Image (cartoon, rainbow, N blue to C red; front, top):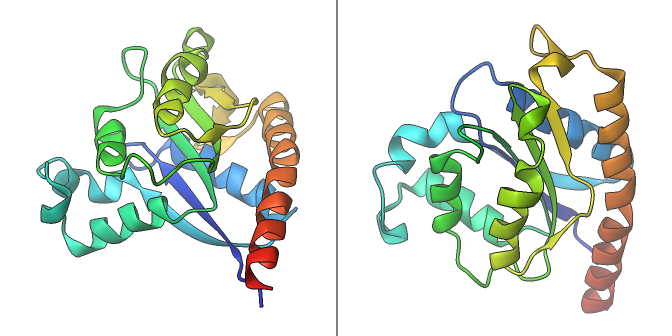
Length: 188
């Protein structure tokens, strides 16, 4: 008996509406066209006020503790953050500060970010990738960066961005299939 792959998507945007949320939604939708999985979505804007006031994981409200537990038990992560001052948001980092440091070993992670211009595109390699390297996660070689010019009215309007999303999710697919194979072997 196999179970569905557990995908956790994190949108690190602090406001609604959010281009980061739109980007993460598009990545999830693209992946869903290729694979069957169980999705747990975390929108940082929904938990930011409570999250920011907690330092000790034991003091987390139950609904935020469940989000952290979902991250720790994920088979695959999709994480996206807006770029502020050349890095991800402080609350995005704080959420991952509450994740056990060994929980994400070998977990595949598709990295995404949004920013005001193309000059922030290296945030994926210079900020997000090192964060998930600390966790010993398997960051996918292709991340998805989008600037304001890629959106119109909080919808993806750029064909180039759509192509990057499709490429990233196609490249992620073998990792989902490997994960499913490992799960099937463990269940046998």
